[in-house]
Length: 100
Length: 330
Image (cartoon, rainbow over the protein chains, first blue to last red):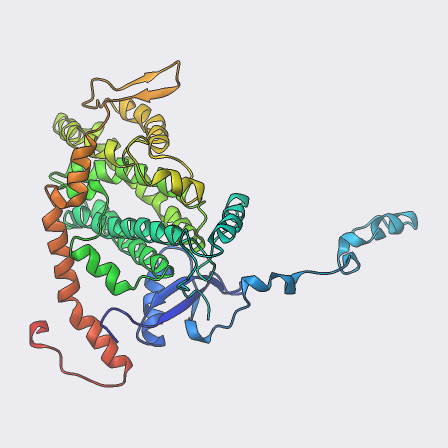
């Protein structure tokens, strides 16, 4: 390993307890412990942060953009969305005017 | 594997299938789709972006130097703290941008070495010295302002990693601009000595500031292609006009003048008119012939070489070994 080309870690930043960790970028570090320190300098410098994860880039599996069709539906799937129903209208007609 | 640059074949004009792939790529980009590191991209797109992001990263790290030198000499503790934070940000921005550049296939080591060796360029403005405290104020206000005009625009560009890095950078630039303007208000509305100092600094910095956004469209060979591929969304001249429209009123409002007798607002054309900068001078400076160019590279080389023991120590610690520190570090 040359002296500047350390492995890459992806960084996930949690703004407050209860919030999800969000991917914010990546850094080079020789190991995970150092990566946490360097990630704090780079991604916890200014914005509120309560927790950081670092993940070696090789540990991440990803789909390929070329397989976009795996995310498509062949048919109308509105049955699994609230907008696919007229229930508000039907509930009102039987006397329920409160929020569903 | 995520976010690794794919070295593509078939990405140059004349390669079989290039025209179809290029047409599909350009259609995506025009639609506003972002390009990610693993995507097919024309060789020229990749090379242009590497060059552009590299120069930007270099500018951030060199930009820390004229201000960093003033940290020990800041007139108040508050200004010293603010300068420390700003310099810390600039170095952080450089790191974000070098990382974004790496996703296109260039190693960090090459990026660092190319700057130190003088092969890669950085913004014209950082080839000059910050001679007085008022220089620091002018840099912090008007150069950050000029940079924000550029960065806010580039943050909407087509290359994902660069756009994302720029959004983080723009968030931190808000403090830089506020701090810079605050310093200039203090000097421009202060004592006669302060007012004279800031006017003198503005007189010396005006030309480099006017050159900041780069050669006019007639001169810029890269602009047309960068705009078609939505790397750049505004021309250099358009950016310069945006800068002048926002900041000339503020400069004049502070009671300052600029040393360009041609500078005036053309009501008809709704544009600022100015003396066209000497682009030959600009080229000489960015090629390393500015007053501070040699000093900047010397400082970068020193930081890189004298910091080597830290990198080696961290690498050794990570490998679970302990190694004696080299004599130079004691």
